[in-house]
View 1 (spheres, protein in one colour):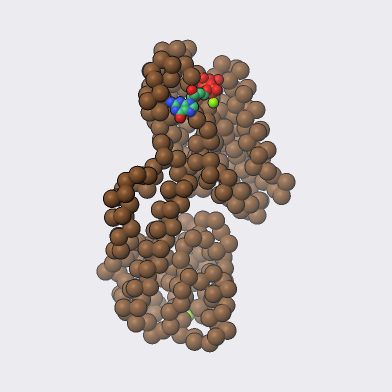
View 2 (view 1 turned 45 degrees about the vertical axis):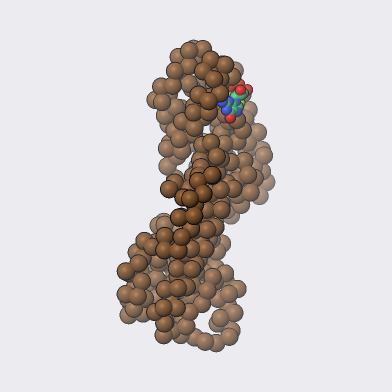
Length: 317
Ligand code: GH3
Ligand code: MG
Ligand code: MG
Ligand code: MG
């Protein structure tokens, strides 16, 4: 089941939530001593895909670059210790929702407090009991899936399966703050389907809805980076939020979107192009404390206005 645009399919949702459906999830085992990591891997590898990291730095890098469902984390490691790793994961938008279970031989209260304060999801004492490990891992993976499902239900638009306005309001400010902390560029794009009133009038609203869906999929496909998001902002208006992207990068993405929409070759008899097209306004700037989401959008919107004025089926920076 695609988790996108699934509202109303209760049987599928139920089966999705069944215990056991988390099998095959990817678990990162972090320990500076290979023998400890190998013991955990042997306990888990029947049900899960296990990746090993032998240092804190390596663990953080893997979580940034790879899809990880859960981390089993040693406390005492040279360099970055477990608490440092957990703190770092919880700070980053991309990694903060990964459950972290500390696995340590230390039963000191102070150590355990540090782990909880760093954002630990759970705690296991060595030597690890197999059934407890398996149940803890399974329970936390299930919780993570439930949260993801709920998020996809509230954050995805029902018609198109892409993000909705609620996601824009709730998540984008946080993503923008991350770009500000990283001193990156940010690019906002406002896209609008051309002459869509005429499309509805000619082909009907149901066909119109199909066009909105098709265009959304084309937009989604043109986005390459995991940090990019496409949002259905209004009826046939879309926002692209492209962190760590400057003007020229943003332009390339939007050119790809315009091309992908033309390639759909959806007949539109009242358009001068004979097919459905979109127009876009792009605004890119270095992100700093004064960067406001509303300003990014209104600047991109000005570009969109100009694109419409200049004949549509184009982008304006
Ligand atoms: P322009 O090129 O200037 O954008 O012309 P336009 O006709 O597309 O103008 P505008 O963007 O203002 O019109 C949006 C139209 O999109 C209005 C409405 O009929 C249609 N629309 C908005 N939401 C939906 C929807 O969910 N489904 C369908 N079928 N049509 C929608
Ligand atoms: Mg150790
Ligand atoms: Mg329009
Ligand atoms: Mg519009």
